[in-house]
Length: 259
Image (tube, rainbow, N blue to C red; front, side, top):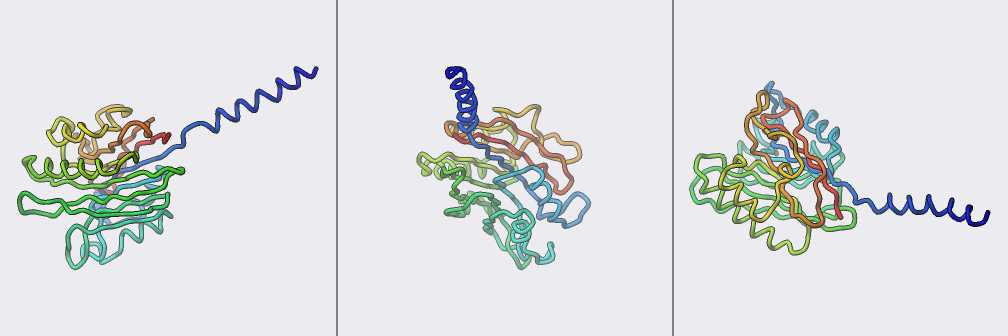
C-alpha cells in the first residue's frame, strides 16, 4: 500500500515539471499602418489597435506612423495606440512631414531597456528611411527587436545598402536573440531578401502556409512584409497573415517559443 501511494504522488509531480519546462511564447506582429488610414479613407487608430489586441501580440513593429502631421489631424498616433493597446511605445521620426513627424514605432508588452533609431545612408536622394531597434526583457531574457521600412523605388541599390546596415547592427547584438520585422518593399525572390537570408531566417518560410501575400489588401499578390529571426533561442511555431482593410497592407503575425 505504501508503494502504491508513492506512485500516485509521483505522477502529478512529473507532469507538473514537464508543463513548467515548456518554453514561453512570444507573439510578434509587423504592420505597415498607412498612417492609420484604411481603404475606406478613414483615419481610425482604434481598428488598428483592435487588430493588435485581438492578435494577442506581445511585440509590434509599425511602419508609416504619423505624429502631429496635418493629414492625420495633427494627432499623436503613437500615444493613442499605446493607450488603446495598453502597451509600451517607442516612436522615432525619420523625416519631417506636414508640420509633424513620420517614421516607425514599436509597441511592447515587455519592459524596454534601451532604444535607438538609425537613419539609413542614402545612395541617392529620396524619402529618408531608417530602422528602430529596442532591447527588451522578455520572460527573463534580453531580446533585440528591430523594426524597419526600406525604400520603395525601382532598383535594389538603396535596399541592398540598407540591408548591409541592418547586418552590422545585428552583428553588434552579441549573443542576444534578434527579431527583425518590417516592410522591405522587396519580394522573396529579390536580391535584398536573398541578402537578408544570409544572416537571418524568414519566419514565414519556416512555418507559414501559402504565399504569405500582404499587398494589395483586397487581392493580395505580393509578399513584402517580413518577420525575421536568429535561430537558437527562438523557434517559430506558426505564422499568419491577418485580413483587414484598416490599412493598405495586411499585418503578419508569428508566434515564437523563447528558450
